[in-house]
Length: 408
Ligand SMILES: Cc1cc2nc3c(=O)[nH]c(=O)nc-3n(C[C@H](O)[C@H](O)[C@H](O)COP(=O)(O)O)c2cc1C
Image 1 (cartoon, rainbow, N blue to C red):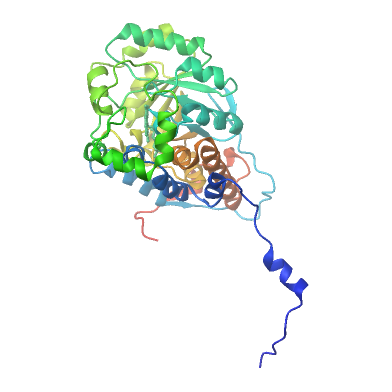
Image 2: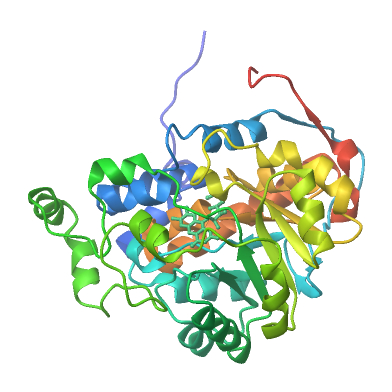
C-alpha cells in the first residue's frame, strides 16, 4: 500500500519553475514554435489568406512540391555510434566564401508582402548566421537599398532575363557595383507556372480591395496597418506591376533565352554565376560546359512545372556528372535541419531554403526569420551528432539510403 503524506513547501519549488518570461506577444508566439511546421501554423494565422497561399502554394496539383517533401521522408540515415561528437564543425565554403552552415536563403520575390520588414530582415539574419542570401529580381527592396542596410551580408543577386536586355545588363552592373558577390540566374521560368491558389484567391499585386479583402482587413488588422503605413509595396526594379504575378512574368520575361545568353552575362559580371532550376544531368552538363560556376538542382519549390523531377532524387546523378567542375546545390521541400543533412549527404555542397524562412517572416518579421534559422541550425547540429558525423566531410553518401516508400 502507498503511504501518503503532505509535501513540505520547499519540495514544491522545483515544480513551480517557469521558462523564460517573454513580454512581447511576438516573442511568446515564436518561442512556442519548436519546428518550421510550427512556424508555418503561426504564419497561417498572422497574414491574410491570399498572402499565405501565395507563399505556401505551388503550381497546379502541387505534386512537384509534395514529392520534393516526401523524398526527404524517404531518407534513412546510417549512424555511426561511439564517436566523440562533443564538437561538430558545420562550416564550409560556398563559392570561396566561408559559411557557417551549408545553407543559403533562396531568392523569393515580393518579400515585403509577407511582412513589412521584408528583404532587410532576411539579410540581417543571414549576416548573423554567417550564410549567403539571394535577393530576387522580383524583390521589394532594390540592390542598392539592401546593400546599404545589410553591408555585412554575403549577398547574391538572382536574375531573371526579360525582354529589355539593356535594362537587364544595367541591373547586373548595379548589383556588381552594390557589392553582390554572386549572380544566380533562374532558368526554370520561361513562362509563369499556374499557381491555382492565387487564381482562386484573385491574388494581385498590389493587393486589391474586394469585398473579401475588406473582410480580411478585419481579421488581420496588424498586417494591413503595416502594409499601409510603410513604403508602398512594389517591385523594386520593375515599374509595370499591376496585375497578377503570372501576368507580370508572362508580359515581361523572355521565353527565347538559351544557354548562349550566359555569354553576354559573363561580359557584365566578373564574379561567379550560379544557374538555378537545373533538373536533369544533360542540362547540368550544358550549363557547366557554358561556364556556370555552380548550379541549383531545383524545380522552383514546385511553383513552375508540376510533376517535375524531384530535386533530392536527381541530385546524386547530377553531382556525379558535374560535381568535379561546379558546386552543386539543391532546393525544394526542405523543412528541417535533418533535411539539410540529408541533402549534404546526398552530394549537395549546400541547400537553399525559401518557404522555411518565409514562414518565420510571416510569423514574426526579422525575429521570426531568426527563429527559423535557429531551428534549422539546432536540428542540423543535433542530427550530425546523432549520426556521429563531426564535420561535413563525414557526411558522405554512405550516410543515407533511400527507402522505397514513405511508410514507416
Ligand atoms: C514565395 C516565393 C517566391 C519565390 N520567388 C522566387 C524568385 O523571385 N526567384 C527565384 O529564382 N525563385 C523564387 N522562388 C523559389 C525559391 O528560390 C526556391 O527555389 C524555393 O522556394 C525552394 O523551395 P522551398 O520553398 O520548399 O524551400 C520563390 C519561392 C517562394 C516560396
